[in-house]
View 1: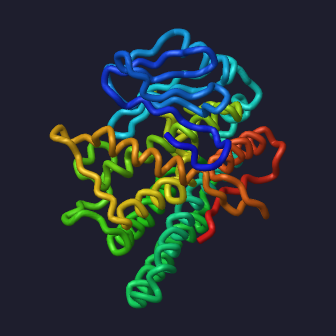
View 2 (view 1 turned 90 degrees about the vertical axis):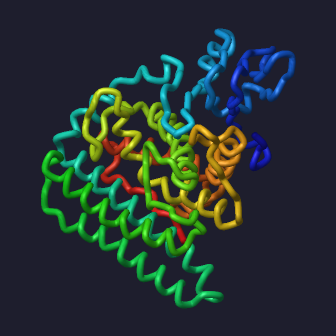
Length: 346
């Protein structure tokens, strides 16, 4: 993967069957047979994404990444993050986790859940308005339809504000219902604004068998790696969420926080890819081929390096994610009066 900005940390992607991930001096290498496919200095490496079967990792490479605080993520073709390797020292904090678990049945937990849900809806509406802005001159009728759709999406936020429940077990289902209604309006608007494939069935998550949904799902997997890392570095437990219910193996907090960033980080990148005429096709097994996965990952990672307006300054989106995770932690510990979700500008 190429750098998107001078000096920007990079992800190393391993997506060739039979590849070998090893260490040479202070560099991590990807080799296949006698050929060196890619290599990167540890100092510039942000993370490693293994996205193919049949990949071998050396213990030296794993140890070097752990010592440098570089996570190794195993991402399936579908975008599902199967496993991640972190240094044990990164998950050794206790105070923040105790506060996080105590907040599940406290007002602070309910407030976080509301904030995550409102931000998801607001950012979906913002992206539709962004798409409408560039259609108004050439297609004024379509631009107005998209603007109306954005207003409809925002009604979901008003529904959340109107909820008078203050117990997590009681507010979870109404929150999810409001999110779901807003999402229906959002994806209907996407059908108008994006060059989706003919016969697109609408939004499908896990198990999608069409290239547009497969692109989104893989992009969300790349984003998940960033959000999980931010949560771990903030001292939080990835599995102690609020909106998403507890379930063995379910990283509920990562799934909560990622909602703020799906639209600005992944949807915007994938929509642009398809609107520019980028064609993604699935292979004979119904999976994204290596070249397509690499293109999607590059598009999402490039988007994460782009600056956003954040509290009066410009900050790369990936740094916004880390700052938001730290804000969750300080809020749960009582060091911050409220949690302010990230709302993208359009």
